[in-house]
Image 1 (tube, rainbow, N blue to C red):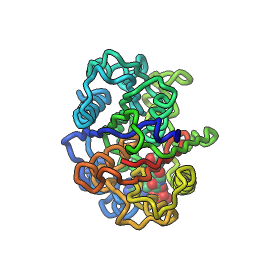
Image 2 (image 1 turned 60 degrees about the horizontal axis):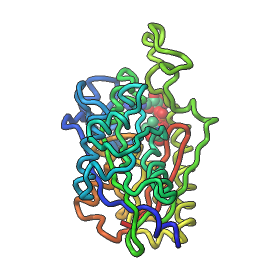
Image 3 (image 1 turned 45 degrees about the horizontal axis):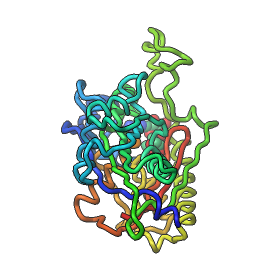
Image 4 (image 1 turned 90 degrees about the horizontal axis):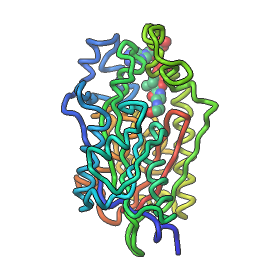
Length: 331
Ligand code: UT7
């Protein structure tokens, strides 16, 4: 039996976006930047900002509830809660356990994984693996990011880029003939970690007054180096996922790339041979929501009818680690 027949399919998706919109004009009042610079260099027009009292777990739970409702599954049916986040509410226990408590998925195991912007694609691969290994029938993959809590609001090189939000999918064992996760590719290169990272605040350099003063617990990024790696890696991931699905770009109805920068999206689509009208974009409205970008785009495209049952979608992402990944999925 082919893996896709025994593996998982996306049975429902959901998203949560905070109401508060921060436009580029507002960013101009916070750091020395301009709407023109942000739009032409990144494609971003605005991003969302979560209120102080709304956490990554809160946003993730909201997205998950919508995905469960759409998939018509109850909390008791969830076997596993997988959470991708670069902004856990606290370092112990996992945000997955906090979300499990909010959702009341009392039969589930729950854990976090840290693949940064590639999180949704790593999550789909994990869900697939647990289903194929017969450890789970129904898995929640939740990507939730309160990037505003780790961004240095005084640093124009990073603060204009990120936004808050959450996306989720219910992945269930598929029956033969149903849609499914047709191929997965994941890769990492930890030697490049310090091009995009938070230097301090973890166990190696615990949080103290010096860390706070130096702001070294906040995101640092070598933008142009990351840009070059992102394009190269997303192209490799797209190639590999297509090869493993025995498909070409002609077989793909839509591509959902990670939403870091419109120029990276353009370059990846061009390389993969996918015309821009088949590429789903939301970076203009939400900025870079790390792992939440791809599932939010997927949910919006399903809701608007752009993607329907049977659509073949190539999802591809790149992020801190470095990590990169792609999946081909038939909805
Ligand atoms: O999601 C995870 C992966 N992340 C990414 O993939 C992000 C990858 N990197 C990028 O998207 C781009 O590198 C950035 C958008 C971060 C930066 O764009 P860039 O075209 O690579 O610009 P740059 O960093 O080379 O900066 C060009 C100039 C610099 O000024 P000088 O040194 O030429 O005078 C920067 O100081 O633009 C300046 N600059 C800004 N100016 C106005 C940097 N940020 C800003 C800003 N507003 N916000």
